[in-house]
Length: 435
Ligand code: HGY
Ligand code: MN
Ligand code: MN
Image (tube, rainbow, N blue to C red):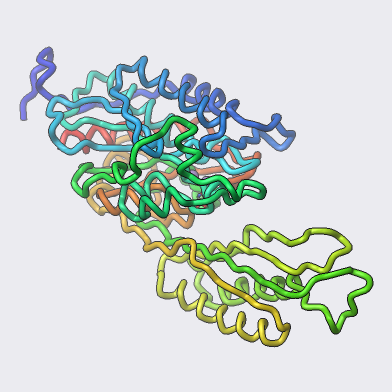
């Protein structure tokens, strides 16, 4: 289609786009400063739990940035925030990008934030290039991607995609020690996000395409010296909570035969999870026990109750379930032998996501046009894209992170990789928005 310049209602595909890397890296550091902990010797440690004052200040700062770009801003009832650059045909399903800015305790400064600020810079770069996209391009800040505060990840994108019941969501209790009384309903309302969570859901044809930019959070790209990954599938996470109840008491007076030590039983359960994850012999099966709450938690008191949270993932949900079946057989044996009660509750068990080959191809084409080598790969970390895949065709762009390190203060992504990932994102969004 011939396009004329000058007439804003006629769309114009972007040519090469240029990223303002200095500005983008500066903004990442500004965002990193919205944190509740002091800078640490290991690097720029960030803790930014959803709906805390740091998170709300970061959101307000981001909104000001987006306002200055003339983007339309909408916030939904759980705080998902949408920044839209309206296209020449605004009624067409938009093209979207986005990620999260919440960070687990003592994390790094790039997880999620590269996708949000990279997405904003991608839109700015397209605007600077003179592009006039047919389809609107929307940046989305998704609420509570990390499970830190409410025990389950991707709350915002689950609600958008209808994979989390709104009532169950509002009733989610605080998962951090001492926060058990609070609920999502209370916390989001106090943060100014009101309205029914049922209004968060978006219809299946709402977006034409969704592309998320994210650090790899693994070692492969750096190890192979490849500057960019194109995700073809996202592993399926599952979360389980185990409560082990025994008989505790005085660490001196309670004789060993009379003890039903909950922590010793929990230790066997933890090793069983590791054993059966390894036993699949497949690199895609991963599992860990990330939290272990010991009650009463006194050095001279035999633990009477332990609460464990299990995180298990696989690209193949059937194989993942096979691991859990084997663990359950061990749970039964441990409970009998140690005369403790072990109960399991499901937190989540999600399906994997497959990226749309056409979007992968668009990103491939952009990489070829920029002479960037790209590697097709699986994402073992979950992302909001796992749930956005329920309502839109998706793909993800990965950039290397040093040593594959993430969720740690020494998480690091090189400015050159951040800029090139953002540039590829911008051009891919521009192409998809002209379809
Ligand atoms: O745990 C994850 O995969 C994500 O980083 N929240
Ligand atoms: Mn994370
Ligand atoms: Mn993330």
